Image (cartoon, rainbow, N blue to C red; front, side, top):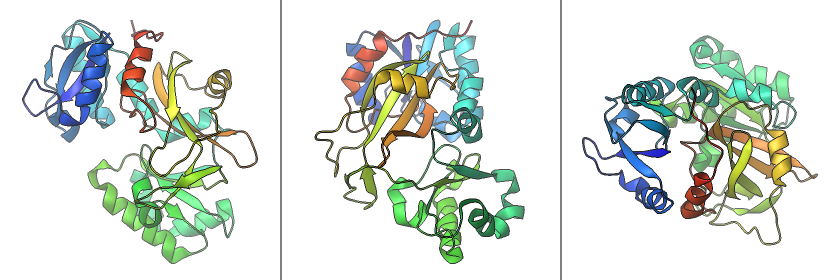
Length: 301
């Protein structure tokens, strides 16, 4: 399988942010190719050394339409992406994977982007009706949160504080800008086992792990956090339990983040496309690509 990385604009040279992954992929025995990073900005889908044969895109998060153009470009060269354009849309659509994981992930409600102008005035009251006065929430869009802006654009301490709810929504939309995807998602803030405090954002860090899953099988996992977190004495969930939890997610390659509940057990925090999900700071890109080399990856026929 070939790994496609973003390149510098117009050049057959890897984007500096992915130099480490490129080296690790080559060391693990993968062929590599390049996708012009301008695709990430809505530009042309220019490719180098991109086919034929199966391929995996490992790069910046793309809009679903841009990923579809990438898939078309790879197909035109006789290749096929492990994650189809339809699979990518699935991974980028929070309501689709949420429904597959109901009961294993925090209770959530969402408002689609096309409805926001009409619904915005009523959102604070709707949140109180759904979660109850005093509930704490996390805000994200269908793909990403602003965890790095924890108190300004992510965490809502009390849903009944209407002014603060509107402030967090306003900040989130402003900071996301053109990257805003799908709509607003409000997730119940549940009690999770703490492992530290982030040194910059001051957000609480929890016993969270990222698992990469190929064809329903976990191929690699690592602690989600590094700076400010201590995982000493802690263990991830059992692999077979993870595979059972995500059995309803029908994607060929994805990443799932799980965190330990204070009361015991594990909660699914997030599902992401496996190609655009980063190896967490607590992991190793070298180990990731070695594990990926033996993964049960099958491209669509």
